[in-house]
Length: 219
Ligand code: GAR
Image 1 (cartoon, rainbow, N blue to C red):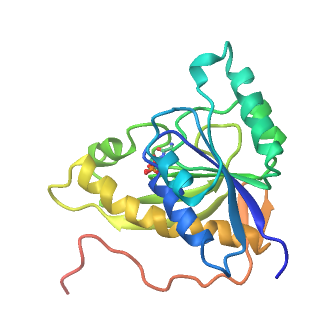
Image 2 (cartoon, rainbow, N blue to C red; image 1 turned 135 degrees about the vertical axis):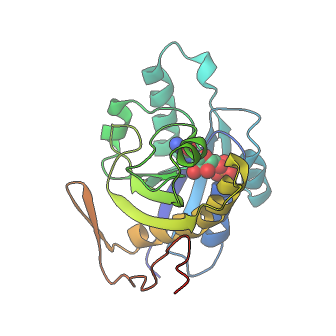
């Protein structure tokens, strides 16, 4: 097999998306491996998954830095030290500087719990419910300097149900996040993604034939 793509994962908390990536990369035929995990929070639950798997779990607390740029340079340094090819943001709740992003052109991926370009930023599930959406979802995209913007690699849609709270909606979306993030990484690792401005063209993809309609038509 050819060399596996080396992933550095950035987290801030629970790390369930990191865990989904970890599970995928532990399959022998998966074309990428996780070589380090960096958290800006020492208490991030996700660090435990890394430790249990014997993957370097690095804490770089942002509070110890005078500027965003100084923090980003230290993160960058660690990623390069581990010879990372691509960076996966997995619930990493810090805005990265444009300088950092430009040092990793089209090599940073992010997962966001909405169907971008709708509902960028924080409190996505609350905003989705307030807007009365009937369909919600999640997006994996390539990171560009503008917040939650960049070529879309994969999306999953779920219904918004009557009586949903931000928590129940988040749980339904999270399940899909765990499916599409490893798949998006696979597409990159297999060299099937071509970036054309803001559009990611995916070679040999299997399009979904089934539309999601909510509420389901009776007739
Ligand atoms: C996920 O829902 C992810 O999409 C979201 O934070 C959660 C992290 O969960 N990310 C963002 O909102 C980034 N803008 P996790 O730590 O269990 O992966």
